[in-house]
Length: 452
Ligand code: ADP
Image (cartoon, rainbow, N blue to C red; front, side, top):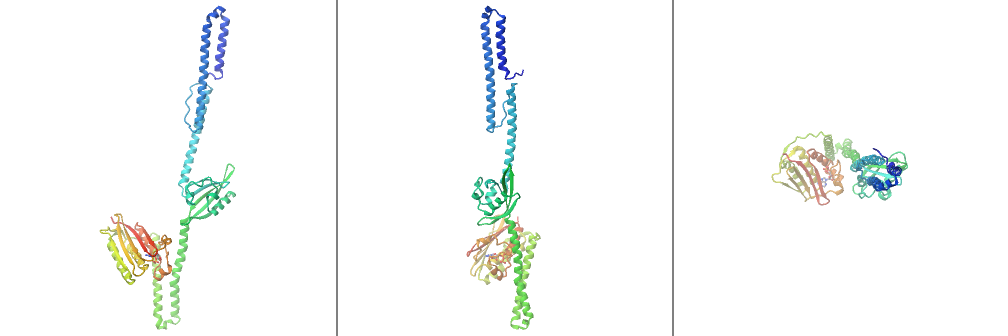
């Protein structure tokens, strides 16, 4: 039977009063005297019942209080079921439901927050949220890495305190006072400059202004743009010199030099030499275009390393001898055969040997080595030549990139040899790299997978 908490003590008191009144009404004084022990026992039992009832209520309230404190501390486990049937049991059930709902909402929010921070944390783009007072409220790891900030140091600091890029700060300031997103570009890094596009969008949440900025790496894009621009300029430049020479000497011959017995042959020779240069350039450019368009057809077969090296070394030895250089060959014993196109690999090795001869002063040494780790054979062409500055090493395999353009041209170089070599090696599934020190020489390496 459901008895209200309010009525419980009242009922007990009423029962007592009624019992006493009935006793006074029905019984004579004598009888009353006789039954007074019974009345006393009755009162005692009633008092005990009253005490027990209020103690149970106190315990249940204490349990509720503890449950509320637990929930407040973040423990949303279910409340113990109250089997009574009164308002306190209703309150306990309602509180349990509320805390359970709250727990679920908090769990959902926590999951969402974890997911968001996992996504932001794994992004390669730098993301930061800035408050209206220019304080960085949040930023991901990529943001700090890009701007070379110590990890975890930026949150809570103002833009001026955390960043050194004045243009980035200006862009965010502009965004904070604007309604539309702002875009820009920043260059960061001291040794290795990198370009980032910046998009900053204003955010209005709960009346407060702020901005979200995203930094996106466009270094490669800018590099490719520069390479393309340079390429066009380089091709024009490379063609211009021989064409001007051919045109000039041709016109000289036509305007009377054909009769100049002493010089006409020399003039024709110069024309031929420049024409050959143009032909070499065109060949190299066509080859490069074919390779870059993925149209290089390789006749893959098993190639003996010794045969490959010998096929190139003869020509190189002739050139080297003429320049007072010595060439050594050092092949690992039983070096395994490689998988590749003999003609193309020969071209790579020949180019490296020609360069070594070209860029090594008389009296120097050149060495061709081949070593294998069972997976691939690494070919090394080292020289004791002029070396390559460290700042140029990264770009040496780019088209037309030359440390000393005049020297290269003079020697008949097109500046495309290493670019072609890199493409050929990569088409074989190998790598090409260089180590060099100014005045000490260079070591060009390329690896080709073993035949089996
Ligand atoms: P090039 O036709 O000019 O030789 P490459 O692409 O073969 O063109 O080489 C590009 C540049 O790399 C050269 O112009 C030269 O500056 C540098 N280089 C290549 N090999 C060597 C070397 N062994 N020693 C010094 N510099 C080198």
